[in-house]
Length: 75
Image (cartoon, rainbow, N blue to C red; front, side, top):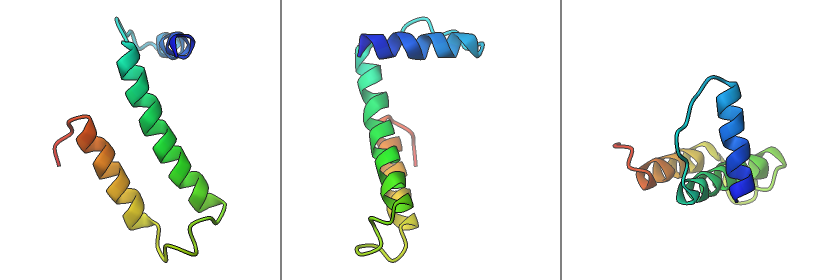
């Protein structure tokens, strides 16, 4: 995970965003969120949700709210 953290820091720096410190725990949270969001979008894109959800948008909203709550974003 440290190699990925270094890549994230390098990309941020090349975009003009200076990040002083990025702990491994922060990277773990980033990856957990990314995996959940990417997974749901991929499942919808490739038609793997049609048999369980008529409309995936409410599920996506619930997931985003859950992820925001996990990192302390107020509702």
